[in-house]
View 1 (cartoon, rainbow, N blue to C red):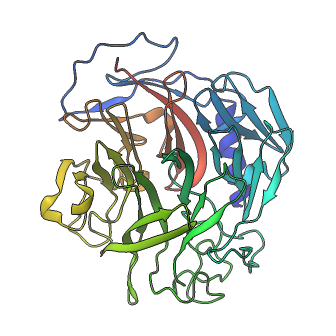
View 2 (view 1 turned 180 degrees about the vertical axis):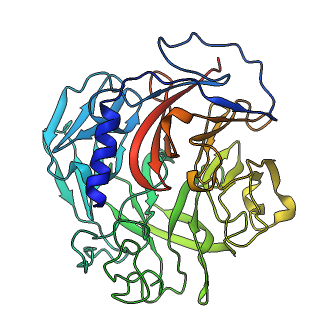
Length: 427
């Protein structure tokens, strides 16, 4: 049933035309005065950005500079002109199961389907399966699922920014958002320093008693325990991982629940030793699910830490877009709340002074809620892009060579559905 819904929503979207009515501005936020850029032809717009839906052709799953990676039934594709044409392709029977992909700086493409990871190093002439390495260097083999149709989202993530230049080397680091649909999965942070040829585990969370593999979509209290048996730190999934070049450190945040065994909302700080190929991680905050630490969208700009909260659970909610010095993340008194959208919001990107974030659709009065600040948090607006329907935007990718952010549109909160492009009106 999940597979059928996944295919149908994407197929309907791929056959749709690229004409969408303008969004609705939510009053109460200030405008801005940047010089407008020339309008892309036939694109709907708001006061702050143009936007357009998935173009006809392959589903655009990720992008980098002028390249895009996409798929259709039974095939994967590579574009070299911002998803206008797709000259490279290869058969891939599990294409409709792809939930993670990344285009590396070398041109390599790493992507996952179900509980398997694949790499192409030759513009999709070929691809091969990648065996992840555990912290001790041994092969990390996914568990045998109770329900073969739900092997677990081992590699799926909610962020579109997964690579950073770390002292001259590109590092790919991401955590899996899992235990919601697709079956139970252990929770890990993965990394690669060689363009995806070798993928290793940077951190493994403990065995969560609420997400054992009982064959259900998100796991439950019975079945096979998953995760590191010797780690008392448990969570449901990873929300975000990001790199701060000022500190040469990575930050990760997780969710979601308050369990008898402890909180699942953690912030971790990790430092990578390239010479030893080893990580040092420390939990720096653990808190309740209605706090600002149940969050996502970690970004670092000029040494400052930005994030957005999707706190829920018992009221009152501690929500908003926040900023602080990284060393003050555990000290609420040193945080600045830049904006409160009033609803759960777990995805955000910052590039060239523009902040883009989104509403979690099940908790929002909007259909497809977009939050925008064109001036790094000085002024804010919110828009409802109604014609997309009830959707949760996530996986914000950095702008491509034509200046468009790429964004996933998920039904409910995480069920894959469609995608869109957004281009800021900022010169």
